[in-house]
Each structure stands twice: as structure tokens, then as C-alpha cells.
Length: 285
Image (tube, rainbow, N blue to C red; front, side, top):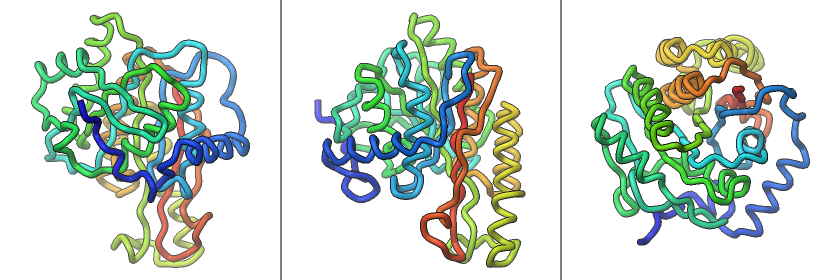
């Protein structure tokens, strides 16, 4: 069966295995610091800009989630840019191409979810071009050679939280171990995005960092999925609030009780200007 193409490879991240591995090793060599010792990391929230901007953050979160001794049977990954009235999406069979090799879809788990919920079902030939999930896949493949994936597009609404709970229930019924990733960037600020309530310049940058992004990060840290959705819809500080909320809901059902902010940056740190985006990496235990 033909895999789903990696449509952002060669532009948002490298399309050659050696180049992907080289960048990943460079990201890891500059790791901000190890996650705190204690309970194992069950999942995380990652950004999804091009690797130049946010790859280091995403890479190190996924390393902490998947880089241990116990490889999960399935990595459940929530993403997609959706509005609250969107239907959820799922890729239910086949595989997804990465420069480091294909990732197989967890078909048996997908089948159980599609019996319980109505999804827009994507295939290798019919899918929405969306960076939120694809940019994480080479990291997943690098750190976990044999895990399958279940990609879910999660709108910022209660149905996504229901799907997250059901995914954990059905994985348990199948005897599958799970890791969970939620993909979202934070505030998209400035004239490029039509959102500039704090003006421009240093005052605006400080407001995004210390107020707007800080608010949604705190809701994530509090592990309150409903509050994450409300915050994202109200203050435009998570472009995929449904994905972050779904990941948190699934992780809580898996038993996570602790959170840690590993890293926070903005695109302004790499490319200064009046328009910029926030990125955070959070892990859950």
C-alpha cells in the first residue's frame, strides 16, 4: 500500500535521512536540560512550526516521551488547525511516510474509535495538507522504531475530549500501551496574523510572553482540558487548542498527575519582527 506522502519534507524540515538525523542530533546536543526525575513521562505538548523555529523544542519533548526503555505500542498524536464546529479527523489505516522510514497506522485502535464517533477519515491519497502532525513524525520514528501512530484531528470542542478518553479505554481493551502527543503553537501575533491588541515592539513581545502565552501554558500545566479550550478560544493563544486539550485529557486518563514546562520561545528569538509566534514544550507524568 502506498504511504501518505510527507508533503512538508524538504521545506519545513529535511527530506533526506542523514540531514534529519543530523538536525535531531544537533537539537539534542543543545537540550535545555533533562526532565525532572520521578514518574515516567507519558506524553507531551509540542509546537509545529518549521524545524528551524521550533524543532528543538518538539524534538526534546518527544525524546522525553519516547526515548526510554519501554517503547509504546501506539503513539496517539492530536493536531490540525480546526474551528470549534469542525468534525474530528482520523487516519485509520495504511502508513505515513517520513524521511527515516514509514510509520504504520494503529488500524485496530482506529477501527474501534470510528465505531464510536463520526470522523472525517483521511487516507494516503485523500487528506488535508496540515503541518501540525507531520512535523512530529520524524522525531517519533527516530526515538521509537516500532511504535504505530494514530493521528487525530481534534477540534476545540467537547467531542475531542470524549475521543481522547475513548482512545485510552479502547487501547486498554486491546492491551496496547500508549504515548500521547498534542501539537499546537501559541499566540500568533502581529500584522501578519491580524492580531495585535498590545501594539507593536517590545511591549507587545512582553505581553505575548508574560501574559497571553503564559495564561494558556498555565492551563496546560494545570491539566485542565476544558479550560485550555476556553482560554484558546477567548484569547487566541493556542492555534490548536483542541489538540492540546485532547492530549491532556488522554494523559489524565492514563494516570498523569504532574506537568513540567521544558522550554518556551517565540519565533522572534530566531527572526525578530513585529509578527511572531509562541512555542512551548510541556511534558506530563
